[in-house]
Amino acid sequence: MADESAARFGSGISRDTLALVLAGGRGSRLGGLTSHRSKPAVPFGGRYRIIDFPLSNCVNSGIRRVGVMTQYKAHSLIHHIGSGWGFLHREFGEFVEILPAQQQHGDAWYAGTADAVYQNLEIIRVHDPRFVLVLGGDHIYKMDYSMMLGFHVNRHADVTVGCIPVPLERATAFGVMTADETGRITEFVEKPPQPKGMATSHGEALASMGIYVFNTEYLVEKLLADAADPASSHDFGKNIIPDAVRHARTYAYPFIDHATGKRAYWRDVGDLDSYWEANMELIGVTPELNLYDHDWPIWSYPQLSPPAKFVFDEDGRRGMAVDSMVAEGCIVSGACVRHSLLFNDVLVDEGSTVESSVVLAGARIGTHCRLRHAVIETGCWIPDSTVIGFDLDQDAARFEVTSRGTVLVTPEMLHQTLAYAR
View (cartoon, rainbow, N blue to C red):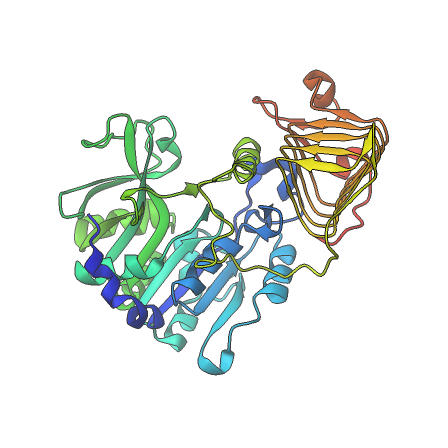
């Protein structure tokens, strides 16, 4: 459905686009990882936050006017964006700015995704873009939005929806659409109990990625009408997009790797198991998500930590990391780290082993500990001789354990006070 001619519009329409990132999600399926932060602020990949991926996509696509709409437990997210995303030039009309829920219309907070944008209509009007790109702030992927904008212009569309095939058993969590041979959407159902499969791919449904391009004039008109409808849920997937499919030119933009023509990398890290898996994928020799791609860098807050250090080289007391990613500031002191990912400023002390685990910033692993298949939250101090991930029944009495065996440990579960900046 996509074509290469879309690229020729890239830079011009990117400059005439305002991106709005929906970043107020609670992320309750991530359990304790979102007890102090919203889902977009959750750390990922050794040094990033989830929000860094859509923001980096915007900057790398030439979209330099970005609003981030926050609501739930937003302090960590606001601090991160303020610290790491101030490098754009406001004097040239470039910015990443926070748009908190402010009760700008009535006395309610954001009532839905469409309402969040509606409550910021004045800001849209001030910037006067030709297009508005609406994004979720809670997925991991690299995408050139200028290609999607070009597709939108080529099709003379009012609305374009980013889409990707997903297995039918997972499609109940997405908006599912049917599109004709030109890409025009003929049917859209939000989170259907029995998703309709694709004619060209058995066992898969065409799912919305929650990425929308709107002609600004059309978006404003529809948001005003939706706000005046007391029966509406004020949601893009439930209300705005189905109405657009019925009454406007609405197209599906397939998210593919243009170099190979195959499905591109995209991960919804919405629960602990998918979060653990997506981090573990990065350790592979040639992971689908290449964080070392200098042509499409992922921007973030630069860590001010010293280099990682591996201490001692004696039998039974050798500091080493094998098949792992270790961020700056870490010290592995006479311990062994295997197939794991350590964020910055982690200490793994003597005689301990960390295997197939994700250890977030500032955590301390005591002496002679054994950790396996675990996610250790920011700032945890794991006591000496602690064993995690080997007896799930015992772990479940102290920590959060998923049905697939991922163990989440937070300072609260250890009866500790968080003493590390989140």
